[in-house]
Amino acid sequence: MPRTDTVALLRLNEAGVEVIETAITEESRATGHKLGEIELPAGTVAATVVREGRPTVPGPEVHPLPGGELLLVHTRQPSTRFTRHLQ
Image (tube, rainbow, N blue to C red; front, side):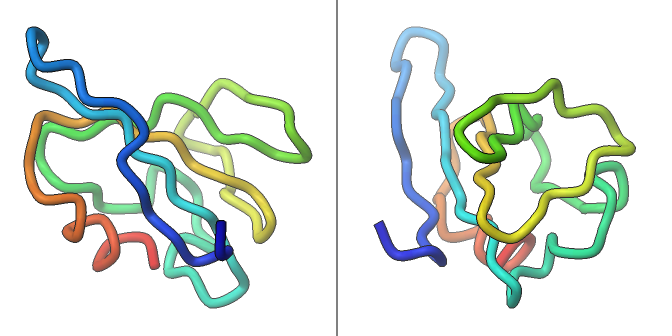
């Protein structure tokens, strides 16, 4: 997967939500910001931040770092909206 990808990993039709993975790069808008400072689309929560293959609990003080991934859960809306917020 290219390091700038944002992909829908899982769609839960009954629950009406999707799980989205976005790779964090040096160029990502999320780089250098605390998770609590990042404005996510309405209906979206950070599920986990993955660093070096290890998931961490995503509190508002966590910094997404280049080379990591951010998993988000959101009510179904176009995934391309995440690019504006994170990439």
